[in-house]
Image (cartoon, rainbow over all chains, first blue to last red):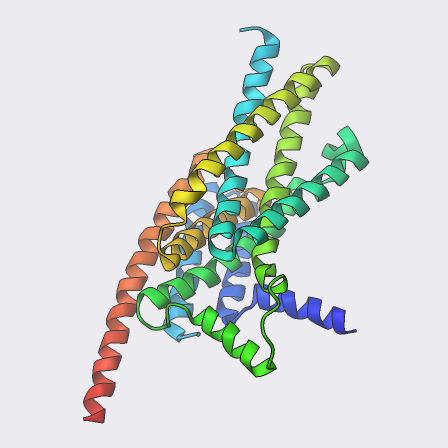
Length: 66
Length: 256
């Protein structure tokens, strides 16, 4: 049980760390990208992905996550 | 150029691109999390890769879906890179102490009332996972390159295709051995800042590729993404530094 908890904690710390905004933003990037690819918006997805990444980082910094 | 020489050159170049990507990640982990962590990740990634290749052989191409692997590894690198960049920006902007992780580690050790185990404290498991994934994914891509290049030219082509990949691997390892020392002299937070930008770039690229994004610039997209993220990171650092300084002035003014 101790090892399972430790394993789960490791991945929680790896993915969420101390800012849940970044984990949500990281997943949102791929969800939006998947939607745009499905709609065959190849040019839009190449612009949207880095923009959402930067917006995610900005939100996390401005929220003051430490 | 003969067909065999062309095949060796083609697999060499294609494999070298993947090997450089893996080397970038391993160097990044080595410089920030220690070489023991980085090399353990390389060893584990190589062993996992060798086991899969030995088990599946040429059937690998039809069994493993590279796209799904790219999505999982891409999103993890993206999130991990974002965490690093946020901390590096906060340090550069004066919002966080430069060596807060060392301080946290020392506090935890003191709280436990024990001296750190030199073997255990040498390995950073977050760094290990990043190094492992980088080597495993890029290694798998090299295997796919060798198998598909060889398959397009008949059964005799496997030997030259493997030779091209091995030459690329040896050359890239040699480059890594030469450049790791000068890189170690760069300040720690600067390295972490740059590494985070690279991880986010790889994460965006791989995650996108796995989902089906056809990057207009191919592999050249990675340095372009890195440049975009670096500019954004610098702008955010400057904005946060101004905000932190203003907050400090207000706090000091109120204290007087």
